[in-house]
Length: 525
Image (tube, rainbow, N blue to C red):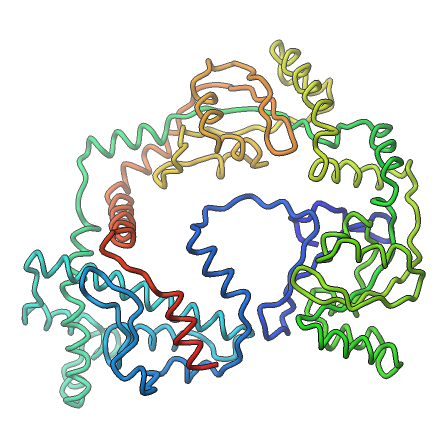
């Protein structure tokens, strides 16, 4: 099971779990993935990235990778393929230009035997395209500033390029033996890159004042330490959890299952027919044809609760077909969010034991992520009571309540997630305070209340956190590190900011996705 799955995996027949479909290594496609009760931390992903990857994951195009990296010399492409514009200049792929060389370069680094050639091709072209956009924008700036590739600079760059190196050093004899065509190719590549490199070097090597370094070092070194407890659904009384399960019996029926998952309905029907006729055994088909992570286990999933089963069906009512089956029945194919699946019921579904500790743990987990309103009022009361008691002695109150105290090391106020400074991602071992502090108001309170304060409970997902702001502290090592490496850190940040500014400029017209799918994949489908 994935660590993101909130259902409980059963060990030696003791606990039940939900289904976890993951990509199999033998799958030649993007694989099939279905997860039950997945609750992932949100990552910083742009809408454009999401859009691109959604499209990428939906397509299933078969092709040979190598021809797709060639010049695509079909009649409609003889003048090149335009992917966008920067200012008035087209971002064009054509034989022998910078974009072309970048595609060849990234293509040579990619194994053609990859399990997912479509995604590999996308990464090759996208990386080459991004490099070309930056190259085009920077060269426009270089041209505007009057930066040219002077011959002495080009000659020095050729020597330093390594194209004619032997034993790590420039070799005159090797240079003299090179063909005129080879020399011309190297010089062309170096000459067109010189203005670009000069601009990037200037950006990354711009020095900052010592006062700026001191100021940032002071910010990075000064912070606060914290202690907190997590009041979550595990504290919900067993009797209340048992009562909820009794009122919702169907959700907590359990059964042993095996599964076969494939992408296409026709394939699923053919496999189901071969099993029904006795031509093939279920285990054989699961091992040879299933695209989920249970294929290596002959399709065996183990014990699942009914509530963990329903998300794996496009039509949730289809799950009742398994609930009413008996041991040995093969059901399906049935459609899921991203697969067609054939199920074998390995044990007749049974009603839960409402006093079983494993069942009660699963009920509480279910409530936390599916019916939080049931437990929220109870947890809020506990959190408020604890906060009042903890104002006297936080550690003692936690000990008496049977709660674990999480200690957070020195953390500077870094709501904007500056790369110069640490954040809760480094100092908070459980990650719960960091998640809560991502809310601007909470983050501000953590650094503005008086040291020693036990704060009012903070709602964080399905939990309540009670936080004690321990003390102001200084991390001298971090301050020294910032001062010592500030010019390097600043140069790297300058380059990132510079690149970001170019990519987000109004001068940039981006048509990569449409062109890639219609032309590159279209020409090679």
